[in-house]
Image (cartoon, rainbow, N blue to C red; front, side, top):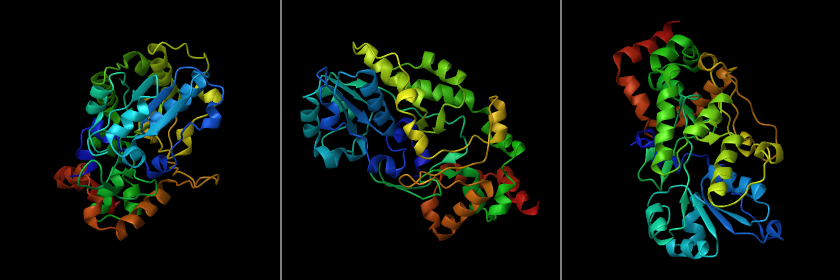
Length: 343
């Protein structure tokens, strides 16, 4: 089963590149010196790390600890250890996580045994980047085996399908145009993406109707399908604090801390898609840079060439993707792709 087969809320716990978990942000004791207010713990993925950072800004009297979802078993051993950690905090905020990440239970177990736990959603929104997919083998949710791309774990479905059908990278480049995007449904993703995001948020008791309206007015509010921009993370952190009885500082996270996830992967909003939303689009792809180095930037031909190079060296089974298999099995879509070889 490919990762794209999984329900998006389940995928959200895992949909981030390895560097996001490999170097997690945590509050250090020295950074919390002098902070005597209510103690806060935040559990989740890279979005939750941003929420924790924002809380340290918005609630300057409170110590804040980020508990990374990806290393729960390594850091805490068993859910009993996690509960012991949280017992020393006054507030616990958490994203959902499934069984398999830590022995002894999942988010339901945590909430049952630590009823103070307040859930907040993982933001996954695909309308700006409908071509982005995962590829790879998934034996279970705790052991994802995802195929590499030039941008970490993120792949172009068009590129994957073109390779699957025997096209070259230059031939695949001719498919990145408005009529193809229209046929693939890329230009009609706003309403489905909004419904799915709002539904996932409502499922954890954190309705986002008001926030979604505000984010949409600010343009493209995602860097990739699961990395929201700083103002989105800030809005979630501010609301959690307010509903938890705090009075957050009236400042913006991007003004004080910048946008951490902008330093990770940035997938462009393709020009025909951007035009639908009244935005400026591009085909400039940015992987996460190493350290302080200036990031490598790929134009569309460069990104496709790098992708096809990786695909050529991979076991085809490692490139499994449900969407690609569906397209390849569709005579109409396969014919559209193969027509690119004759252009």
